[in-house]
Length: 453
Image (tube, rainbow, N blue to C red):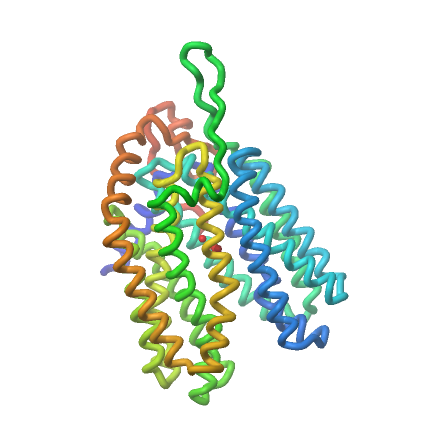
């Protein structure tokens, strides 16, 4: 593929989306660029404060536990309170937690702050995903989720590099920068992002707003197709999370050092930043069930092949395989969630889906560590391969027709929906031109970076 064709594909991938989406994209990029806390938290607790590795593991697990509660809370607030106030409040809460971490050193205080940070960081995700579903035309929803995921990973890459260089200034400085970036993210949302929560339906006879049906976590889980989607996503998330714990332990068992692992796992971010736009182009308009099945198989092949790897190059090759699966799965799953969710309950559906990411992020590390220490790493990777294949079969046998129907229904209903927000330089929208359709961007937006999705 020539450079010109790559540039043309990139322009097609980023063009035609509402201006409001790019403000949301920018806020995501800013937020993740300053996301130092989780990257360096374990080192801060063990090296700087002298706590045990066990305590560091407990604290990180508390962050995941907070994310489970945050997903449900964020979904509820997104639908009841609104997308914009939920995003602003959760970002400010996360910024406050990062600020407190710069000064609190008591073990119980750190544990409590990290738990609340997990609630806030995961609590914002349902509102982000619901906003994208609200404002982006139905045929572009998957592409928009992929671009937002690209922003997440680009920001994370910058944070990892910048944090590593800036650590000479001290861990507390990193936490202060994290707090400032998250607060700036909240400011961008407050000043530039419109509220997109759909208005309540109106009784045509009386002209009064109709009461929305009560929707809670249990109500959402009674939706059988969506419950299946959540369960299968949980399986995939467990497979996706396992390498982050099992891979360094496996490589250490092969006699490879920490620097080798750092180089291998960096491949994940490099591949996403470099090729997400190309993957978007290749997967555009494909069947969602097919994409979810293919991504599950890529996870299965990539993690399963880890049992056969013995060198840094071989381990890096396995990371490339499951990273491609990640790039396909994350936006497709988010779009499928948006398709299955009723308009008035988008936040709560996204919140329940986010819980599957948070649960996997809490449980998978514990299971991976236990399996590596017990039966051995080969058993872990074989189990991941089996789970990935099972998920692929589940998507094809249980959700193929459901997701196809939901996709078709969304595209048929699209002309009546798709509110357009304006306001990003270089992006011209229908509201700017007075036409009834969204006009392609005249220039690409600033480039490129859940989970618990």
